[in-house]
Length: 249
Image (cartoon, rainbow, N blue to C red; front, side):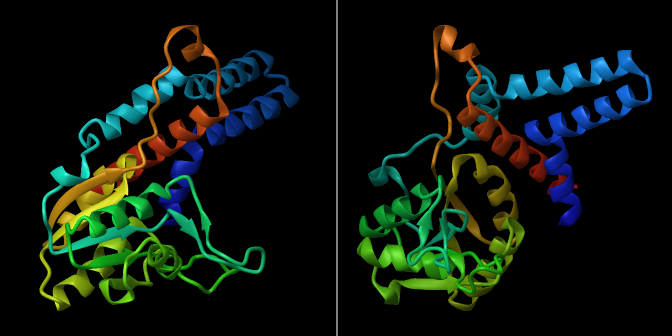
């Protein structure tokens, strides 16, 4: 797991640019100015390329195109809805209530599916990997879903997982105990490919219910203007692609 995180950090736009810049400075210190210039230029170009809306849209589309948005009434029935963590930060000493992240659509979409009668049970999957809070992501999601009209009795918490593979494994253990086989898997569209791979390995019939789409097309000259928001989206997409390739091996 540490090796995977290291690889992802090194190939991320910012991580790669920092490593190449550091190497360029080191080479310059030892008088290798030409090679230092080349590495520095590559680092800047790598960072610039992935901050462009046109590049961000392209790489995000590689992950999201297989899971187009679906209207609630077109989503099939299932035995349970499984919502993956990453959408909320639990309350801690710095905040009194859970804090929603960019992926908070997962929670809202799960509530919509439940309230539409698509499944009688919601499994909330997410542990706590923060020393600042002992509250799991699953418990934080329950806090919000309760306010969105989901009764406590319809929620099952999986509090042990800290990555997607563990999400799948520990959730499947809970589901098999209840003789549940068909699930609606709710996660971000870019994360769905990797999540499906792991959940399918757990002897579950998985129906993707993707949400939280990153791509907003930008046309004309604006697609060539760097954006911090698009840099973030590109970094997330690269993380998903590399994570999927590593776990498949």
